[in-house]
Image (cartoon, rainbow, N blue to C red; front, side, top):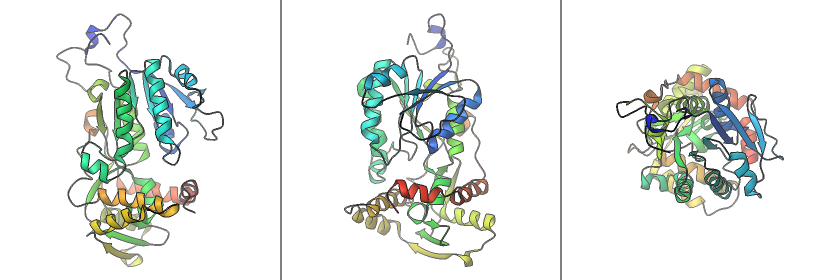
Length: 344
């Protein structure tokens, strides 16, 4: 790029992101990002997918088939794209696949890559390592930087609210089906959390910003402001106590309808780490439990200052998000995820 201001760019430069490629457009988070981008009417969204994939791609996109065993098919699909978003299943060979895609993006000259993160704030070394979930996104960021072509933008959204609330005790400590709650410490430590829809709105709002500042006097938000940085977003800051209060309001229940226990965060975290030497379902539950528990340590690690206002994003109503979690649970989502993760 000729310079960091739009005024320095060659003739024909549009100063906006128009062409966006996404891998995983038919997945849980990917479909929300894709629909939100298409809804702006400002982006041509290309969904890169395997021929054997059974996921339904949202309408309004251009579908292009790729083969992870043929890197040139990915390079070809990414030619001319301005922004690549990776949303890959955590239960597949995501690390190896991401590395192939990032290398292909560099070969195709894609200016920006959003790695497969969508989780905790990984900027703190200790928290990123102990919460387990920061390692993968950091590895992808290093891949982008080592290629030396694209710039990365990682969406930090913390844990997905409706997903985590619907799935049960290992996630937010709440099992809606069994009406049980395990409060970590006193249950009042608050963390950021985001819904899938909020993630979609955030990416659509971000990619609708000008790519570069017009000139030296332009202090407005731009895509380039978050280049090689996390973009932190949130639906709300919420504690387990807040979640149970919301469930009580939405379900018409009271605390008396739930079996409530307490567990110290440090003890729970160490117990989950100890289980990670096992195989199968216990390993998956141990990893999830350790990651979520570590975010609820009462030291503020699970909270961050979001960029909502800068990109024009509003906070959400927690009761609306809780209703979405209940609808997700009713739809059979929990059983589907458990089957895919080998938890059944």
